[in-house]
Image (tube, rainbow, N blue to C red):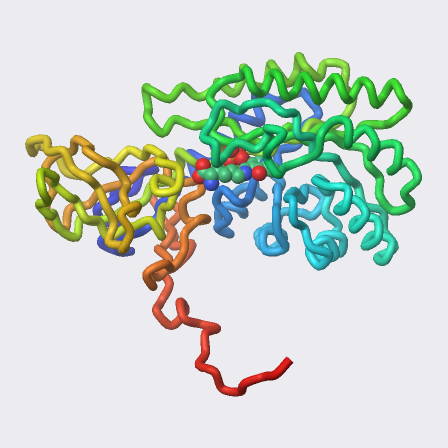
Length: 410
Ligand code: LLP
């Protein structure tokens, strides 16, 4: 049972592979975070990239959670799901002029600006639209988030943000900008962070810089502390930061700050609230290895292939002896491996398994590689379920493709 729904019945009704998300679990995470920050002027802007299904975004909207977006596509989704523009922050190193236009037209709350060139694009586009864009500078605080290299963003060598030295120059320059109000600081140092120390170091740098700016006459209205709170992929082994401790650190660090603290959690709100349901296609005996071949693959859940990420694999049957399996998908890549040498109760073709911790960066990172249609997604809520993305059909998968009909010359 997951959020009161029988997963065997669900898998029969919806077929596999299929993502299932618990609305109850997501609501609990939202409420827990809101409670931890109660009394502090703050806004939670959910990082849409973690799980951008419209139903998940609608759940956020229903609980006054805004959005942290990184593309015009995420803007479109967020607005469609009912998240008001004034609760949307726009991050990302490569915002195009068209995307800036779309965000200005929608009236998003603020832009997290990541380069000097972008600051000028913003000024120019805002002037064209006759509006004043509110902006924060994304600081690269040069701290090691102590997480996987591919999801670290706060080291000087990463592409994200700018140094404090550069940011200092921006504030002097922006004072003369007619259509940009630069009055915010932003820092996001990485993802799946399980220790407070990197946050402590990064936030301290941000706060020291804020004080320096205020001393030199600048006004800072918001500090965006990014996302990054880790979750327990290995329950009992991974020890996520208690959200109260995180909130206490924020309160303490910014005790002198009179403005809005912005949070951009993604994984924390949805990661543990989702599972990927999959069936065993067959068991294959290899040279000294037992392969468990699933109907889910790296195109459905990329994290194990891309980051060697651990996800628990839980068969929904018991009472059989333990076998050590290499758990793989059907895609033609050796990297299409969910786990190696994983101890599981013996499995047979047709058995149902769930891959846990799949609510964040699961469906949102999926593709149709090997021409495998996108999996279905289902929202569960206290004993009921609703399909919130039907399984892609082959026709939908190929929509937009066409054989060359007319050849153009440039
Ligand atoms: N804010 C910004 C500016 C971000 O770039 C991200 C994530 C977040 C917030 C949310 O971070 P979270 O709270 O979810 O850690 N695909 C990877 C994670 C990439 C994260 C990218 N940025 C994974 O599956 O682990």
